[in-house]
Image (cartoon, rainbow, N blue to C red; front, side):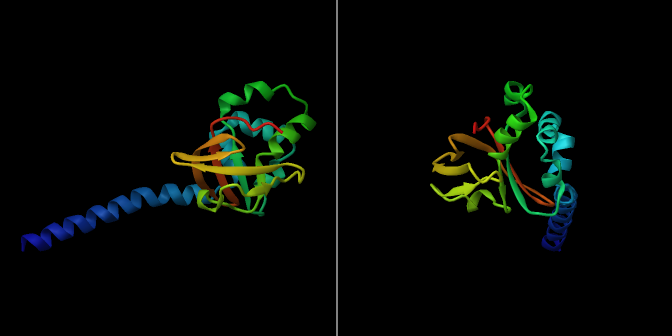
Length: 154
């Protein structure tokens, strides 16, 4: 009898944990990349908008965005829209790629078509053009966001 009661408690605990976790994951996957940026990364959202990337990051096409940290954006906040477009386009590739899809040494063409992002695996993580991927695999409705430790320069 005790074993059945214990198993029942474990089952209830698993259900509660699942219910607590699932709404958060579902909420993320129902947002577009742009919606996520507006809510969680307002400085980056403003620069992406100024650069003209809002439609791309709000659309249906699957995108992978390598998002620089808010702290690194001060250095580019006064750039022209054209220069911002050049800088930020080197952080965006077409297609949804999780961290495990980013093969060591393989280049991925950025949306601008002239720059590429090359990945290097290390024991403690992965680098994108020499910048550490610190927060990988945020799955959203229209792609994936990987949080970077810095800004990639074009």
